Amino acid sequence: MSPASLDRPLTLALSKGRIFDETMPLLAAAGIQVSENPETSRKLILPTSSPDLQLIIVRASDVPTYVQYGAADFGIAGKDVLYEHAAEHAGGLYQPIDLNIARCRLCVAVREGFDYEAAVHQGSRLRIATKYVRAAREHFARKGVYVDIIKLYGSMELAPLVGLADAIVDLVSTGGTLKANKLVAVEDVADISARLIVNQASLKTRAAKLQPLIEAFARASASKGP
Ligand code: ATP
Ligand code: MG
Image (cartoon, rainbow, N blue to C red; front, top):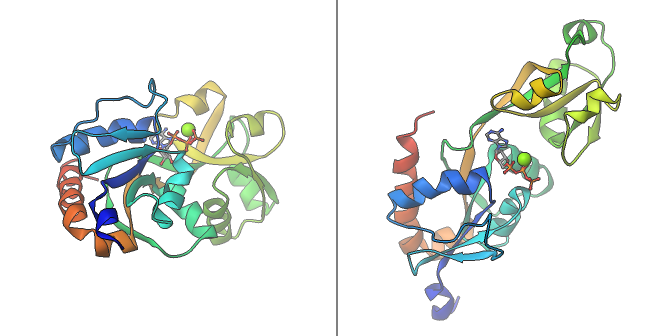
């Protein structure tokens, strides 16, 4: 790598919304401020108060891809996203810390009144709508439940209401969205939080700039507790 590319700022890949919002205090703990807000700015590359760090704003599910290929040196993504990404691609990513932000649960949910336990007990084949195909498939395989998985990209809550699926596997935090759609969570699949992921080559070649930031994130997130 040329000296010029080693001089370029570190690039951190983030999605806007809750991951961006909850990352700002971690950056602040490292003494770094971001003056532009991705919700109002159309810019996809945001400078920070540090000349050594810039942010790129990408779709949540694209964060691992940018980091894996080295277009970002590091990134922040939910365990849900990382698990599904690993199903398609291997290698290139180093996952050093749980940042304890964007915490929620991956759950099985059904229509109010649908007897999930009975359906499982009877050995019925269940139709499951989800964006989290790998996590869902492995969850039901562990339970020994036969399922047909239907991949969706959003608004999973609708699927059981219109007869597309018996159940969904989706992220739940307060349960407000489920409740508003007359759904109930019946089973936990996994606890979810966001992780810092680092490109393996960057970790070797750009350690001097990366390590202090990784350590500051680790300290700031440890104080948030599990
Ligand atoms: P897109 O909107 O681009 O399809 P997304 O829905 O995955 O992506 P967000 O809703 O911002 O984007 O979610 C980003 C990450 O935040 C998720 O991958 C997950 O780890 C976490 N997350 C999602 N929903 C919740 C929630 N209700 N509470 C806490 N964290 C959540
Ligand atoms: Mg979302």
